[in-house]
Image (tube, rainbow, N blue to C red; front, top):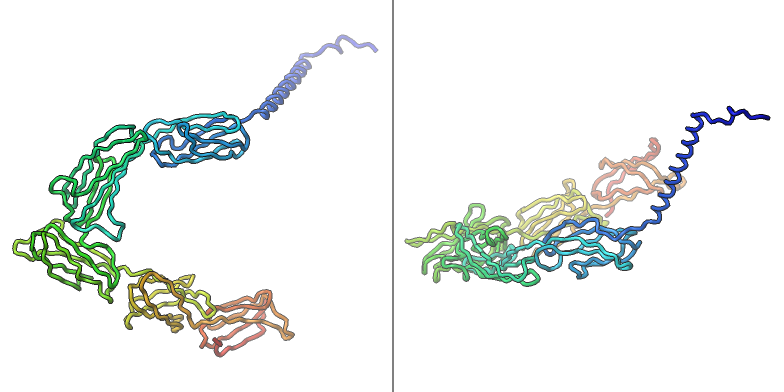
Length: 469
């Protein structure tokens, strides 16, 4: 068979198709080579992020990165000192560290792959922090007029080996300011501390003769602190506590009147004479029947040439009571909600509260003896005597019982999924797989009616005259 030249000649369209086919093969081959190359690649040791990039000594920093060893060990260094170490999750590192005690400026943070020795470094800037503290007591205790207070200055992350002028200024409730200049030496680690006593170390005229808040400032804005000065040694007292009162800034032998008021009614008054300008009085004890609340204490000069203080010697204090939790429970020792607890002191009603879903009533009671009565659905169901000397918790058992209902047929087979309507409680119960249902916390001296049904068909009515407790 002969083949003509026309049969052997490729048309333009055929040549184009062949070229396209070749091109496609080349592209696919290149793609396959590239994918194979990616599988062989490994992670490099590098820091991806550090947050924040600057901060104070003691602040927490988060670092993310990779190491080249899968599930390998790593070390974080801060200026070549080890900070922390751990194991990578795959190749990934998520670590946190606290900025160590060091001087201000830029510092190197380095991530090291312990197996390969590969590392990467980034920069963290340490900022200088300034802090003021005092030795004022923790509230509710407080400083009194005439007291000294020690002021402490702390610097961390400062410039190395310098001496700074620290201007410590105290502003009084009279808006008068007194400044003490401290020469504070910063160590080669960037930290330093110093203390001073107000008013003793401050210029003439400095004093704590006024009640209120005193502000402490460092160089105007670098740091600030406050402390309180009052007339009493505490802002809170309890019954039978001794109240200590001190006021200063009076003339020697000046006579003053101290008054204590509660809800605009004067409950105590005393005339006192200043000794060397100081009123020092510890002659009043909180009465054993004192009510809880806010009390006002006032000192007023009654001398002819009376000292007039601005702000005046006036201060509030409180008798807050103690936190007392009473849990109302039924005879099965289960908590009962919606029980009204009435609290009496010497037959006088002082408060009512209702138990929550956990059966708990939160009360605030002062030192003393109390009687609690429990009412449930307008019926008194319990009573409890309380003796309060501090925070405490008690259980108040109520005359409430549980009714266990067992539903059977005539052959004594237990009936599950039966519906029991309990009157007058308006309570609907469903029996479990054992044919049992329980009605909780019922009043015993009540007539109850039980209507039992299943699938909408009533099959029994039972009346109970009274529950046995």
